[in-house]
Image (cartoon, rainbow, N blue to C red):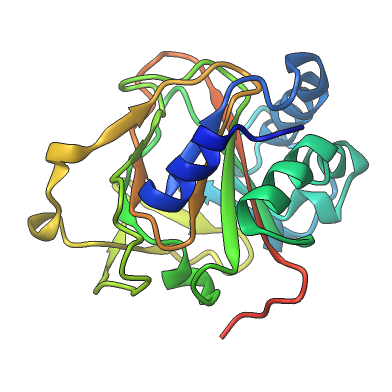
Length: 245
């Protein structure tokens, strides 16, 4: 897997790039199928892996919680590790970061067809505290994504200062919940009144396409109004000799 000079330049200058067909749809199909099983409660995983819709209102086919986020699924099953440690992904990360890399974390996203909140502009290092230029995030589509169908949007060059801007706390409407604690899941966003969307770039993708962006790049995702479940896999890497703050 070789990143083109244009892709490397775009990543360095604009804080993001994207790759068509990073991973084949055939390789992703077992992951998507397994996520649909998790959605239906077919697992014995610890509660710590899941963010869920309001368990008092929404139930899966087995009467259990409905997951919308699965944290670090690669810790549980090889089907996820096959993608989280995929050779094409590791090669792309090493080229963008400029050296040997290691996986930092991974999260599967289930954008529910019935109810799914949008995400607002934020910087991932506000959560993770990885030092500037040491980390890179990937967002791999497992379904077709576009406008009002969970597409990722980027504000180019928002990484240039390598500084975290002020974020505010918010809760999704309706709330998402931590399955272990039963508490509403709090998130962070850049206040909307400080965001200039005039330079926004939306990234429509097909299964197997991947976006790459720095931990400091401002990004968000559209709500899912497609009428179908939409699944994506977010995987973060960092330089192997790097460390967080």
